[in-house]
Image (cartoon, rainbow, N blue to C red; front, top):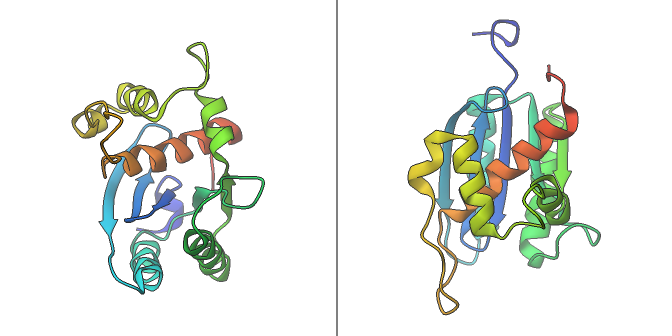
Length: 172
């Protein structure tokens, strides 16, 4: 399969404290692979970068979408910001354009229902848009509970959907 015979692939990666989640889209509402990868240990950044590199090699995406972790974007742990920079360099070395969106940009893109959505509402909105994700919507979180690991999947999907809305043209 060559680049000319397929639709543009968009790989969206969302880093979190447990590892990362990714979604590969072939079109606006057509995810065809996704996953959550947890990495543990003192070198989890290196482990994540290796796994992300393998995903990039496997799918050869036309575009990479990540969260903006600069000071103007989202404040994240230092190792996540550093890993985000490494992912950007990896993509640029392979000639893949990188688009980064802040948490505020994501929330604003889904601000159709009377105010910026919570992560739970965002997950439910995405599941309505992409029926394949309905089974992954976690139950609402109680204040004493930590965030469900599946929420990273919706964060990655939200980044890709913001990309599609902002470009509003075909990639490739």
